[in-house]
Length: 91
Ligand SMILES: [Zn+2]
Image (cartoon, rainbow, N blue to C red; front, side):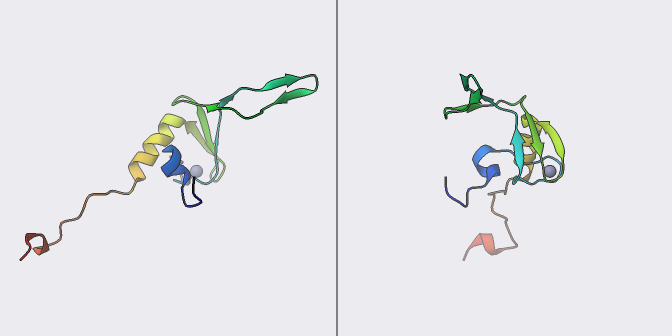
């Protein structure tokens, strides 16, 4: 993943309140290894789904991943070309 890849583009979520994708925290399921003094995440996959809780620490808005996906969809840049005046007719 490059440095220019945004959370919104990579994961399709952004805050449904302030539209930020910079400080999103998600309640995910990970596999940990148990030790006598605690539990350690030693790598491996991180799972979440549309019903997982997600929280924006920019504006303190919380919701579900589904809501934040809708927000990402709404504000995704449109790729449709705008047709302006008669220039589309060509010469
Ligand atoms: Zn927010």
